[in-house]
Image (cartoon, rainbow, N blue to C red; front, side):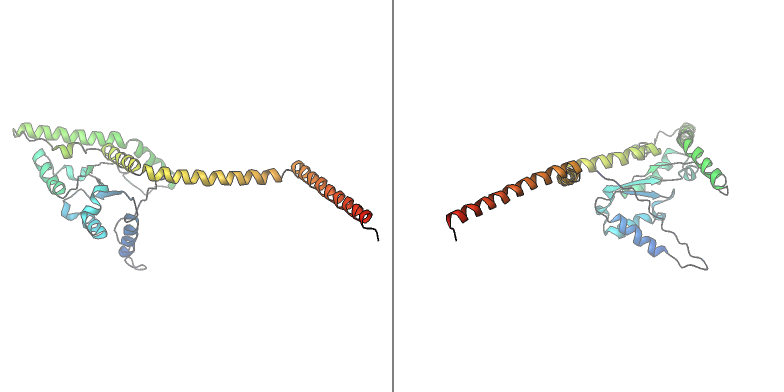
Length: 257
């Protein structure tokens, strides 16, 4: 199955003194990609309340109704470390995510390291980013482990028995998002397997015909084969000439002038 990943632009404005606001053009690009058949959505959320994440309303507007897109979307709340300080307890964390869950939005929580400065020469910037990627998993694990420890400390201090909800707990870390996206792709492949097999059989049939044509062309492009065939043709021509001549002699004997 062919699969294409499309990194679409965010809904931002690049308006300056020399250029116009291009948000509407960006929205057109987004809608065009999102509406394609069998498209799956990876929706990035900001680490703040649902009402301040307009991408949800944009998706509703693009498809006309939430039922048309929500089941093929995976939500990632990036830069979650910016929100951790406001969620010191399981109670506050559950309250924060309740509105998301009530709107059928279950975000995976992601924390990624960032460079202290980006104004580096291209080669140094590339190396720095590679090192950053290599350390991303351990960095994220460390941040989430520290958050969970703080939650435990808060629960002990205030004798609070509430724990992080299952919907939140099972979506902590980028690995959970990757597993979810892999499962979506696997389910889609299984669902469309008959269609894929039909297409493959069609391609195989066309390829077989093309191969037979190429072999025929290759056969007649071989000088030895050409000489052999021409020789056989000449022999057949000679036989026909002889037959014609013999017939003409017989006619002259049978019907003398």
